[in-house]
Length: 132
Image: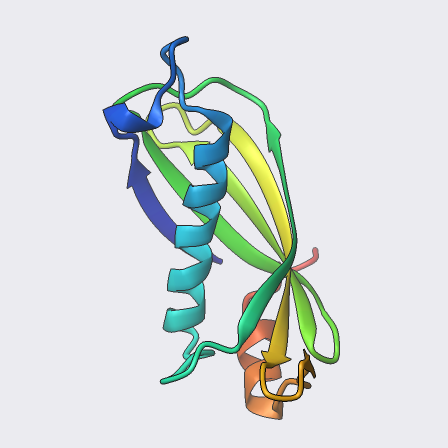
């Protein structure tokens, strides 16, 4: 599982004092980008597009709280994969949000999906949860 930490900035909160819902998608994106880089799925050219993104908000989050964004691969297709992301409040270890997204490797020249290489597939497989 891939993990990053995010500390909530004041500008990410709204009039109600909690993190505005749109910022959870920013946290998910930041985690996705680091995930791609760490797995060496991207090089000089960025060749992934986001086909779908969803987030369920379970608990309120406030300024200066630290979240751990945990990412793992749920499903791997021919040219796409499903990423699940759990956002956990660091101190309490409570799950505050759960997100999912579908990412497609894309050939921008041909304007169509691009199949994964075996090496890419292997790297993604390493981040699938172990089923007991």
